[in-house]
Length: 258
Image 1: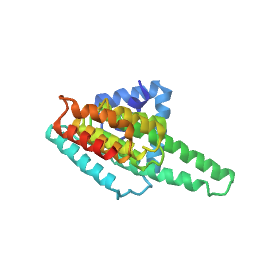
Image 2: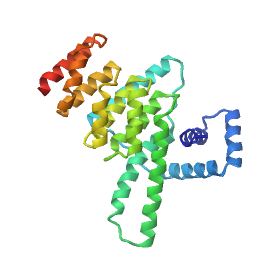
Image 3: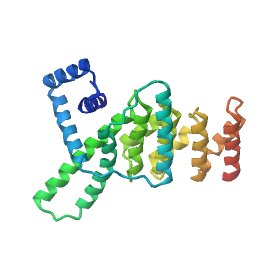
Image 4: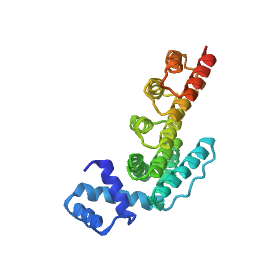
């Protein structure tokens, strides 16, 4: 079983969201697979630590947009008769990830005693486990709202590693929900000063087909003053298959960059 799928399954098991048959299947797996049992114990430790954290209140415009989009996803899932789960563990993990990042930074100011070094090491391990859980949420096939929560974690990271960047681009390109795709793009915008992200955003303009994402992406690249996209904007403005709103945005972008 793939690592991310196993993590997601174990989270549901710890949160009591599996039926009797699924629970029995997981318990058998835990008896037969030492790797799964080890991962379960790591998740328990992370969740125990997160029980002690406080919730983080979003204050930026990006976080407000995310909460509005998340509300829309919940309404859509409710209308389609899907049951939406907001696991207290999941919400605590999102807040806890932020807290653990701060604690790791503070750790550099601690005295260099063996015990304190061990504490920093343990916190780093817990942060890595939390990150893996968040990455599993981003690819959750059952709930767009949980994928939105997974994307939201990246809003709090100062610099994204390759794993996070790749996951965000994957969500922006292929997630079935427009809200999730837009949230992923907005998260990537935060890291647009990183060369890999900047290049990926420029290249994505020629690949993107979702009109809402196209418009937002054009606005972002124009705000970044990326004159390298002028030729692609000209192509978009002439493409008969592109919606008028997108073509108008492309034309406006050309005027601003010229």
